[in-house]
Length: 272
Image 1 (cartoon, helix red, strand yellow):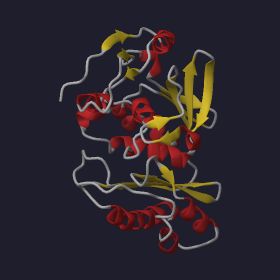
Image 2: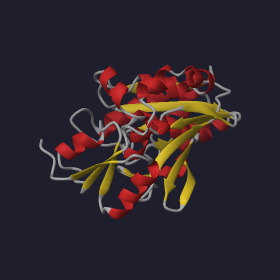
Image 3: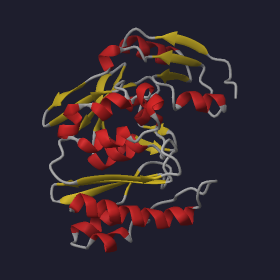
Image 4: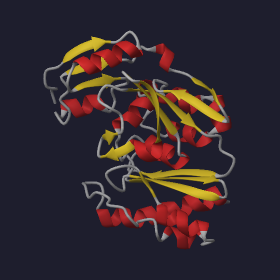
């Protein structure tokens, strides 16, 4: 439970963090640390350097952006969960943040850290995928936008370049129903399965947690709903294209059954 040796630097700005990333192979950014540090203790992650950006106050904010909101990457889960603006414009994000871990985790963990970690068992990536949110990254070439549908590329891997910093997450205004459900053994555990359902432009977007190597969209369910299928029948397609893990907490077969139950409930709540 002791990490491998690493160097440490505290970045005073985003530009300095980008410079340090470019100058050090295998460097990692440290925000809240609740995802990275446990992986380092297990030596799953062995960064050559930790670049601490946790004190960059200019990356902690919630403000209007078009019809939606822009959320700074270093905004703590607690602040996301209690933001009046998020509750008003995109409440599913606040609801999901309030369900992450326990109070200690929510006061230290950041929305950007949770997203950049790319964990398929994470709550927030699934919600942002269902919302078709936009991630904003800054690197040596400047700023670029990455749609959530293209952001999560593989297990713990994202579309961020090694010398890029995730700085902002943009979410749309919700105009229809929504639902966020997850099943776990204890409140602070990772979800065995999670579901985010959002009504948008007459259709429904459905995101799945812990059903593959990345957060997934339940395209079969979305197609069924679009064709007029009722929630119960549409939910039967929830397992299409998924590859859930088998671990000490549940088998792949159990997750395949559970996801149908949660998708049905989420559709009924979002469409009701």
